[in-house]
Structure formats: structure tokens, C-alpha cells
Length: 116
Length: 345
Image (cartoon, rainbow over all chains, first blue to last red; front, side):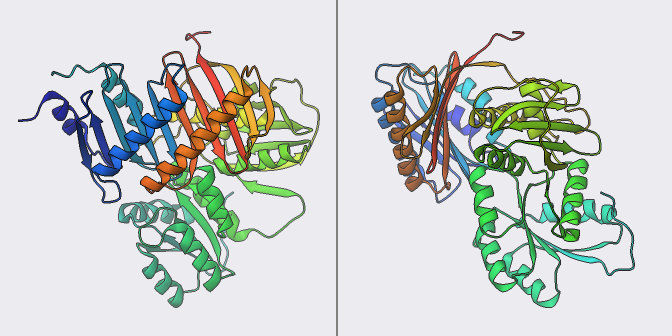
């Protein structure tokens, strides 16, 4: 049986152009959905780890961003971090219809209540 | 821009795209526009395209940039070797500076965003028809492409030139004034200043011409051109996020667009690719920002190794009260921090 976080991710996972999406819980457990061999779960975890490494290097004395978007010529990586420790990672193709919808999805993630 | 009917045989135009739906829309949209002056061929793979080129001499090939196996850039290079006299155009669903640069370097003569409306197809038809009829002439003329127009502005500013860019389509006429490498005024429709510049740069199609400088009626724009162009791209993205998919972001008749949230620039830093500061405005900790930019470039390189998304352009960070944009390119790094302004200010 899926918990609320899993269900939230399943409901939003992999619209056209989204290559992968992953959710890391405050306890470190990780859920991922991937549509492409080039972006499997282990790569999503590495991406989130990379963000945490940058945050540790850059935002120690400053507030971390609500979300950050790494823009490449063929796609975007969106990382959204909540104050309670939940972390969302999304990888989308640059020319997809999903790319412009990342902001509403990020806002929803920041406000949604996940059960324990 | 109308095509004159002549007794000449129809132009042979080949569209290469891995999306059959797009090729179908190309046929359906362009056939009535070209009125028999073009013969339109389509190929859903590069193999089919090469076979078609063996059988029929083409006047122009339009190549999708994002295709599997052999992508658009590689295919353009191949075409350049096998068919050096063929006119080549890149079509893309998402224009980025890196993509544009790669396609033009690979031999494309135009880099055009894929049309998403009938007006868009009309613009593309006019551009391609002009390209096939084009012969070199004195002075500079060009077709409006979002990134291409930015490119010309960038060239004029880098060269510290003085000129006026006249931007037009069948409904709107606008002017961008550049003096000694600085953008000093823009006007189009009922708009002037930075907003006019932003809307002209976001037009879905049209033409532009570089004409000799003349003093503008007023000075409405100041600030570094790098920031102005980056801000124009940001505003265009903001507008796009509020636009119905398939609709042009800016009305090609009036330059009207949904209002993007207004912002106040708090801090700007422009550096060379090596991190040497070239310009800063209100940047309290230049060394710290340079370190941050270098850190971001390093992390972006690591991310690019993890997932194949191409060349890194910029990192945008959204904070509760504003956003930060950090662009890192081999030749230039830019850091801009802006604050959200309450609506109506």
C-alpha cells in the first residue's frame, strides 16, 4: 500500500517530457520514477546529492533557495527543498510542455502535507 | 513578403523531424501558404532524408535540432559535407543560446523556433522563402529570430557600434537604438523603454534591419546590455509560463503580453570566463560572488556527467523574496539578484 508521499509522486510522475522525478524523505529514504534509461533512480539520487553538496558549500550562512533550476540546452533539473527536510528532484526535457509547469508543481510540493 | 507567382519550377523544400505529427502540420499549414511555389518533402529520419536528397535536388532543408540517433547538429554537419551548396535551417521547439550557437556553427543559416500557430507558420514560410530568394547585398539585413536578433544586438554592443535596429512584421514596427555599444532607447507599438525592448525581442516572427544610427527622440534605457538581454529572456520566460500553450507569448499585432511580475535589481556582476570582474553594480562582495559562480560551474559540470542534458547555461534560484540568476559560460559569467516588487509598483 502506498503512503501519501508515494501516492503524491505517482499522481504527478512522468507527464510528457519529464525524464525522471525523485523524492527524498527527511529520514533519507528515496522514491523515484524514471521514464528514461539515461536517468534512472541511482542518477536521480546522485543529482540530489550534488545539490546537497552545493548547498553545504554555498548556503551555510544564507537561506537556501525554495527551489533551484539548472538550465542546460537540452533540459532542466529542478530541485525543491522544504524546511522539514523533504527534497524533490525533477528532470525535464527543455522542449517539453512540462517545462513551463515546474513552478506550480514546486509550489504544490512546498505546501502539501505528507503523513508520517 | 508575398511570393510572386512566376513560371519558375517550384522550390524543393525538405523538412526533417522525428515527430510525424509535426511533419503533418507542416504539410497542412505550408501547402496553402506557398500556393504551388514550393514542393514540400518530409522525412521522419535522417536516413530517409539522405535518401530523398539522393533522388531530388533540394533548395532548402529544415532540420529539427532534437532527433534521436543523429541529432540535428550532427546532421547539419553531415549535410554540409555531402551537400555544401544546400541551404540549411534549424527548427527547434526550445531556442537556447547554446543550441543556436551549435546549429549556426554546424552550418545552419537560420535558427528558428518551431511555429505553434498559423501566424507562426506564416512567419516561417516568409523567412524560408526569403532565404531561398536571398542574394548578398550591401548593408546588413536579417530575419527576426528571437535569439538571432539578440545576437545582432550583442555584436553591435560588443563592437561598441552605434546603429538602429528596425524590427517589424506586417502589423508592428519597432526600433532599438544602440549608441557606442549601449542600448539607449527602444520603441514599438505604444511601448517605449525596456518594456518595448523586451516585447520586440519576444516577437514570434518578423524581420529586422540594421540601419545607420540617428539620435532617438528620448533616452529611455540604461544599464549594461548583458543584463538587459538576460532580463529580456527572463521576462519572455515569465510571459511564456502565463501563456496558453500554442499561443504566441507576444501579440504580433500590438506587442501586448501578459504582465510579468515586476522586479528590482539588487545586484549585478559580470565577469570574464576566468572570473575576472568586468562590471559590477551594488555587489558588496565581488570575490564571494566569483567564488559562488565558479562553484556553480563546477557543480554543473558534475551534473552534466550524471545526466546527458547538454551544455549548462544558468542556475536560477528562487527565494521567498526574489530570485538569483547565475550564468556560467566559457567566455562570461553573470550574477544577478533581483527582488520581487509588489504588484502595481
